Amino acid sequence: MSLPPRFARDAGLALAVGAVAALAHPPFGFLPGLMGYPLLLAMLERADRAKPLRSAFWRGWLAGSAYFLIGCWWVAEAFLVDALEQGWMAPFAVLLLAGGLGLFWGAAGALYIWLKPANPLWKVLVFAGALSAMEWLRGHVFTGFPWDLPGETWAAGSAPSQAASVIGAYGLTWLTLAAVAALAMPLIGGRDRQTWRTAYWGAIVIAGLYLLGLQRLDHAAPADPTAPQLRIVQANVPQTLLEDGSSFPTILSRYLRLTAQPAGRRPTIVIWPEGALPESANDMLAPGSWVASAIAQSLGPDQLLLIGSYRVLGPAAAPEYRNSLLALRRQDDANGPKLALKTFYDKYRLVPFGEYLPMDKLLGRLGIKKLVHVGDGFASGPRPAPIVAPGAPAMQPLICYEALFPGFVRQGGQLTGVRARWIVNVSDDAWFGRTSGPWQHLNLSSYRAIEEGLPLVRATPTGVSAVIDAYGRNPRSLRLGLGEQGVIDAPLPPALAPTLYDRFGDTVFALMLGLSLLAALTRLRPFAARLRT
Image (cartoon, rainbow, N blue to C red; front, side, top):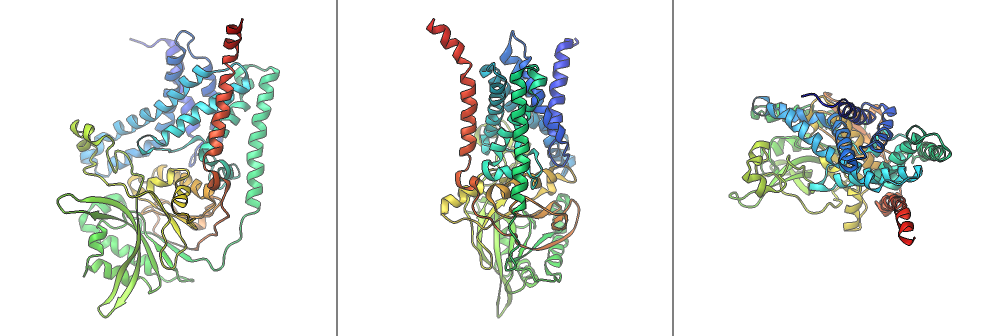
């Protein structure tokens, strides 16, 4: 049975629209792909009049599914680490993830049609509000997955990305959607005075993003000669090697050699990535541990080591696992050098279906826990807060997935009253091989630096490791790409004064959504007028 020609055409166009928008994101960087959003708006405008909500949902879902298929296909690599047992799940996992995330775009399409006003400018505002509101929801359901927000299409460190220091990634999502949709309005709604006026406003907003961003970058803070010297260690340990128990000595020796190699200026802080060693912190720091002794010998007496590891809490019969960042320092006594734990951070935001299973009791009965190999998973730590260790300014750790979340660092400062001076992002992107995933993760993480006005230091086992300044910039000399082995030696970039986003969070974004709601309410005016007559 063949599909009706119009149905097949519309489905193909919706998939193409989503794919084009996804290709605008780094590392692809095809910025004309931003026109995918106004094309989506045009498709929603032409939804089936007989069943408008259903038609708009279908078109939005298809576009979103294509968008997330291109944005998240790298998830398949995690299942290929153990290809014999889990490889068969890779295509299903990618399709289910893309289709599930696409539901948010489908809901946005239906919401737009339900609220759609007549005026071209109001259409743009309602479209931006509907899609950005659903993107916010995507970032919060089941701990959230705010991967590739439309506002993060702009390469971090570029002029347009600097707006995140004022309105955050969600606010920049609303503004980007509104601007590109307005710019294309003459192609969508006809070439009359109202549509051209709307296009002018879109052009002004985009020009403003560039001009104001360039001005901010022109006034960048100078380097601080007294800043701590960092060393990021990237040992290039693929996940297959990490999973091989017999490779432990090889993995450890790589980290030790890179940590101890000479430098022009001796590092005061050494950073190893998440899951650097396939051993728990309990075993590593146990009395008489040869691993702790070997690590301590690779460090100088005044060096601080930040390392991603996991801790085991509670009784052996019912252990609780925490994904942690440890701050360790060498401590010498009569028996030789040892490692002393100075402080730690436990990961708060866990990866659903990766580190924990949502609705554990229900899905466990259905066998999903066994299928996705979550096991007992990790337990969430306390709410995020900056930590302080000897020889290091106050830092806010972000472990892997946590670097996706706007406002996360700000919340930690509000909780304690202590503003971090830098962000430490340790991640295990080795799961995703030589794909676009690690490069996307680098771009998305860098937005946290822009939002907070804080430098961000990123350490991964296989790339991409980097030192990112408070403007989201990351020169090639301060980056180790995929498959590279080595170290990055650099002073910690300076922190800026608190940004407007750090002060007010998503308040401006909430006002933007309020503006979209006001635009939607104009649809009620004709109805109210009929009631009065």
